[in-house]
Amino acid sequence: MRIYDYNFLETAAIPSDIVSFLVQIHEYKVRQANFYRQQPDALSKLVEAAKIQSTGASNRIEGIHTTDQRLQELKDEHVAPVNRDEEEILGYRTVLETIHESHDYIGIKSSIILQLHRDLYKFSPYSFGGTFKSTDNIIQEADATGVKRVRFQPVPAYETAASVDALCNAYNEIVDRKKAEPLLVDMLFILDFLCIHPFNDGNGRMSRLLTLLLLYRHGYMVGKYVSIESLIEKPRTIITLL
Image 1 (cartoon, rainbow, N blue to C red):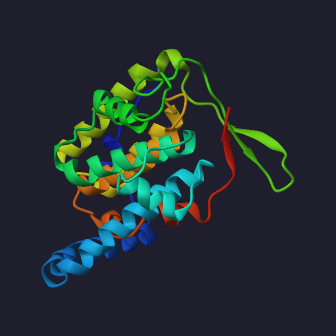
Image 2 (cartoon, rainbow, N blue to C red; image 1 turned 30 degrees about the vertical axis):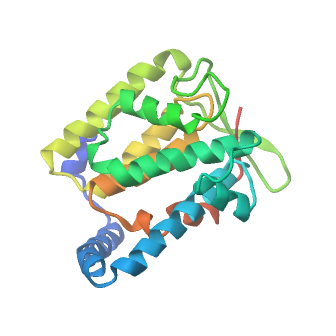
């Protein structure tokens, strides 16, 4: 099984441009409190807009689409999903709401990740929601001419459960010691999660939901007001999972 160890982050030399970027982020984090006090009504409106944008963008990245009107209706629970795309969009909205409302109480462990994945497919008739992948998968990317090549080979199915456990344990260990930069730990966790690629379907959406969860747990709340998923959507590379 692969080893997950983030202890090196406590003493690693961080490039100066990354340090500068982290300092700017920390400064904006400090300024969050002022926005909460000064513009609560405006922030409330931004939350609702960001939820819609995030739900739409994260699903579009995976080729899952609906109209803006249907997205709003699904968000407001005025209509029931009528196809697979809408089922998965509604599932994403459900998990997003859970993370928005309960992030401080959602621990980083494999059982929680499985529960979130289960809820991602809450409105779908598929049996793989809430279970790790049953077969090996590969990640391919297509160039501008449509030629495909293998990008990387994820962890095999039989190692997945143990790998996710080890990943979560490594993450919690380094975070509990509070000696490493949280943002770097968070992003390495997401990278390793994607390298494991633990599910038959929904890995990309889960990675974006977990990104929000980790950021929120460390006090970076920008994802509530600005759709990070929309920013990710713009420059993406075409990647397909087989």
